[in-house]
Amino acid sequence: MRKLAGLFIIAGIVILSYGGYELFKTHAAEKQAMSEAKELIAQSSSSNEVKEAPKEAPEDFIPDMGETVGILKIPSLDAELPIVEGTDPDELEKGVGHYRGSAYPLQDDQIVLSGHRDTVFRKLGEVEIGDTFIIELEYGKFEYEMVDSKIVDADDTSIIKSTAPNEELVITTCYPFSYIGNAPDRYIIYAKPV
Image (cartoon, rainbow, N blue to C red):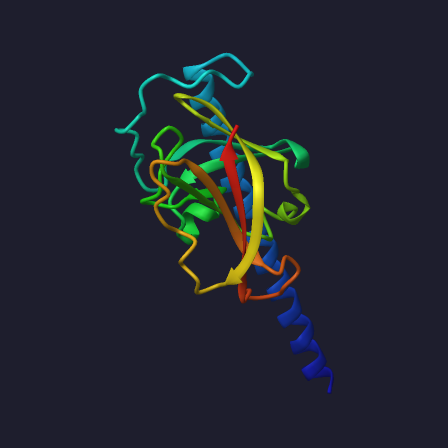
């Protein structure tokens, strides 16, 4: 009986240690990506205000996979999160992922950002209609206002679609927020340019 209890204790310590390591690794990757994003933004602009958009759309702005490209600010949550190109696990470990193939601000189409509900988007369910999101990239700051939200099945890809020539910001995360394991649904926020 003592041997069995000892095995359970050792197994518990191993599982907790692994979980702690993964959490530490994720926080370190997110911190590094935020540092890169702030450096990128600082190099291109020293203003903290939402700037007037450039007259020409940056059609040639196509970052490499895994590249840190900017910052997503959610003022109502006092959140500042790095944006990384791609939505694979490696990219989402660093911050908010930009869905490859979707647009960026001023490209007149749907912009899709995704993140984990248990890391970067832990409080996303507290955002309400009328709250704003600010995307900071090397070519400007862009503000969006939440206009709607919905919950869809995890396999529902119909939310990712062209909205050209209208720009729309779509933010996605797993749902329910308190679910343990692979969540069955996705929480979707829709926002329009201000």
